[in-house]
Amino acid sequence: MTSQPDQATRTAPKSEPLPGGVRHVGVIMDGNGRWAQARGLSRTEGHRHGLDTLRKLIRHTVSVGLEYLTIYSFSSENWSRPETEVSFLMSLLRRFVQRDLSEIHQANVRIRVIGDRDDLESGIRQLLVDAEDLTRNNTGMTLVVAFNYGSRNEITRAVRALAEQVADGRLSPSDIDAQSIDDNLDTAGIPDPDLIIRTSGEMRLSNFLMWQAAYSEFYFCQCHWPDFDEAAFDQALLDYAGRERRFGGLKAKAL
Ligand code: IPE
Ligand code: IPE
Ligand code: MG
Image (cartoon, rainbow, N blue to C red; front, side):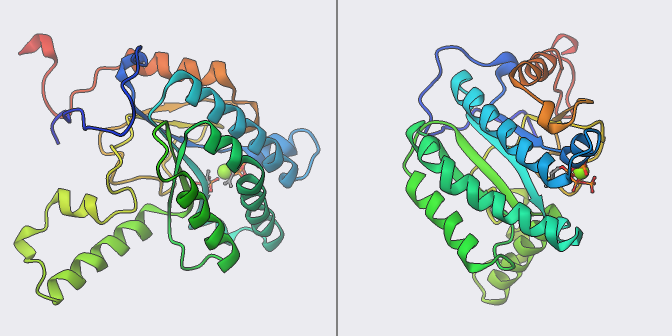
């Protein structure tokens, strides 16, 4: 991968570029359960507070002019949690879409949902489709919601789609390249994340954007997700601005 030419986007050019020219930030919102447990609260209380943090972050990223924000909301492995927690997380998504969609739409935000929709209850699936449809023509920030998302599942589905095209004679195996794989991922058309933030001190991807994060910068912070705020986000951007991305090449001054 070379340093990508700036792709044309629907977003109007911003008067002030963000620190380091960052366009796309992915966030692994982790630590809700530990935040709650440390306060003698139930894990679900942590998720409730986590949703408040998310609302604030969306408002903030819109106000600073970020182009793409991807949030990891529910992983394909999170089904292994107790049924009560899983159903609470499903109801939280429902609440988020029902209560926040109009504000998000007003803010000219476009919603894209990534992840496997097949296992989702039909009511939730419809809510996600409706959110995408309502905001489809918005031209501000794109909010990418990773729900029932896992990279291995996403890549598996992309490989299957390519195999079907080959079997139908629509594609030759020698035409399969990084671009055609990109085009068959849920994130097709979305630039790779420049920066991935994970809260709560864990230093792993947990199946988040593994293909897309090939050259992303990582920022880990100790605070649990409900304590993450605008200042913490700005700090992550400042840290990013000090990084040198090389994409396998050499430092500019070494050329
Ligand atoms: C992140 O917080 C939210 C989701 C995974 C949905 P956790 O629920 O993972 O919180 P910890 O990591 O157990 O503290
Ligand atoms: C990743 O966090 C998933 C989300 C934030 C939605 P997890 O808490 O599920 O990840 P692990 O289990 O600690 O790796
Ligand atoms: Mg966790």
